[in-house]
Image (cartoon, rainbow, N blue to C red; front, side, top):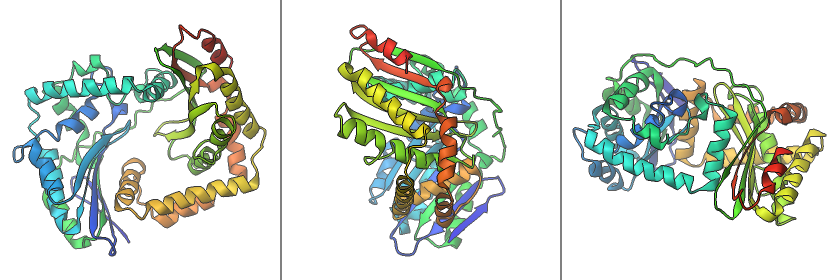
Length: 420
């Protein structure tokens, strides 16, 4: 059973007790991501994620990791375009230890100027690592052209230039705006009594600010055809096609995920089978569906041998045209639904996955949803729903294409992709 309650400061808590496990997974979710940044402070959400592990008034940086890992637990964090999550997984009897450490990180981090300058070097190396990964680079480039200078175009890590602007004042100002009760969700899944959960969370998180600074941007995203290539001395061409998808609370959310499964969401999908397995033209190829508050991005990524760019992209176009013409068999649709449902059910066997589903749903959708409800939503998608969404998604006037490769050596690539 899923329990939920709200503190007077606006912080929301969702909790699911599972009697048959020995662990508890805790996630502290904040409405703080690159979509809430600007050109001057881009990367600050991710920077804060790093800084909160650098020591508090009560614990040195080493102690934060040592206290959790010393009891066999795990602690980590991640930042996305719309949220930051700090999470732990420990044995159930160590629940309060985790809550104590997470609250200490949020409320008592020292965030010294020396630590900030040192961490800039670390994040600069992280940016270089992503720049050296053509796949990551291609996805970032796609976001930049598809969302054209609007908040969703901001890279999560920031840029080397924007990192220079981040100091203690910038961090504190951002935390005062974003790290508040109404902007925060704590999700907990494991073998802990509900009464103890509520008592402990209230004790450690009652001092959160109740300021509500979370407002919808109201920004409209208009997709038009854009193409951009970056020259890089690498062996393959890394190709990303993106087109307008659906915002995350659109009724077609699950419909598009089923289409994604059919087209390129798994090893049994059309793109993988027809272009990699049958033709042997690529190593990596997949489709993806990213949904945000104001819009969505549906896309295809592939790493292509430079000698077979024309043939590979022609085959990708053929697969798109097949689904546009209605060439999806009913049994293929049923299998994609069954796959999606099965993947979700299997994820429920892990307390960390359940915690993520609960926390993300509460933070981004402002709702607590049961596994049964999600399964029903998947089951309720009709074959006709998928067919009706296809022409909206695959509108070539909205295609955004980002590509990275040795363009000086292979000058024909640009012409091929301009005609995609």
